[in-house]
Length: 117
Image 1: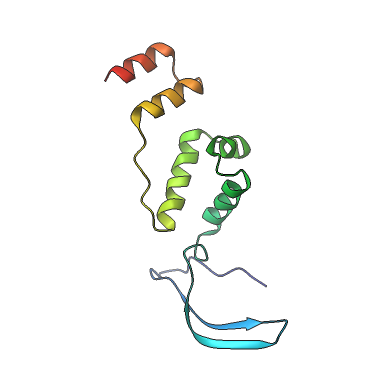
Image 2: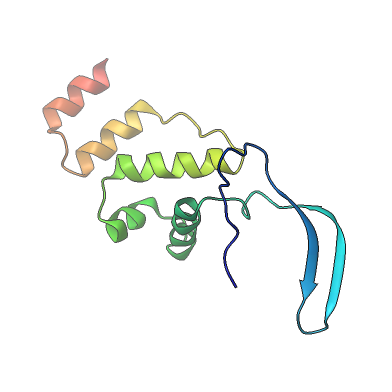
């Protein structure tokens, strides 16, 4: 079996399924069925979602497994959220500054300056 050929070139709407086949029973059901938001994810988003679930929603662990920066992980997570119909929340600037400090990306002086703004 092959995965769904999604996204499909030049198509902006989600596809409709018109037939379901259940191999064990030999039953085929015809009709018009919508795919859920997870069924139409791009392979990249689906792979990211699988990893996110595997690490129990820990973005720091996703960062470690993929070997990419935390901001890149957040950007990919936000892309995934949009793909399933959610608008990502705006990150708290103070939280981002503290996370950067914790990861050693900025010095304590830089963090203090950014927090005062």
